[in-house]
Length: 136
Image (cartoon, rainbow, N blue to C red; front, side, top):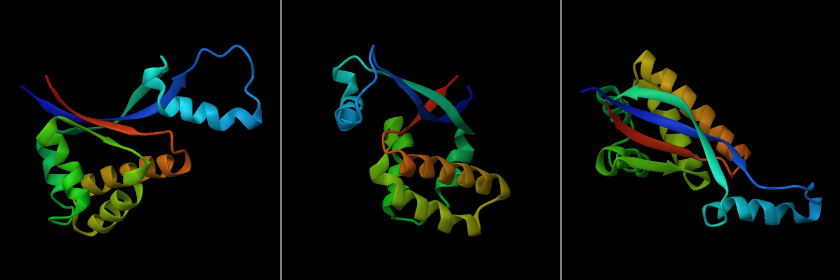
C-alpha cells in the first residue's frame, strides 16, 4: 500500500449568477463565497503538490520543533487532513522559509511551491489549501 499527501488548492467556485454583480455588492458576493457550502456554492480543488508519505513526514520535521507551524502540519498524520487558509499564511510562510536552510533539495522545492501557494492565498483570501493523506 502506498501513501501520499496531496495539497489541493481552490481553483474556482461556481455561483448561479445570471447578471453581472454591481461593484457595491461585491463584498456580499465574497461573504457568500465564504459561507458557500450553506448556499450551494461548489468549490473546485486542483492537486497542486503530491508528496510520498514518508517524505512528507521528513519534510515537516524540518520545521522548528514545538512551533505552531509544525503542529499545524502534523495535523495531517493526526487527523488525516488539514485546511490552510488566510489565517495561517504568515506563520507557515515564516516557518517554511526558515526551514529551507536545513532541507534537502527536494524539500526545498516543495517549500518553494508551498510559499508560492501561500502567496496566492495572501493575494486572494478566498483561496485555501486542503491537505489530505491518501492511501492507495
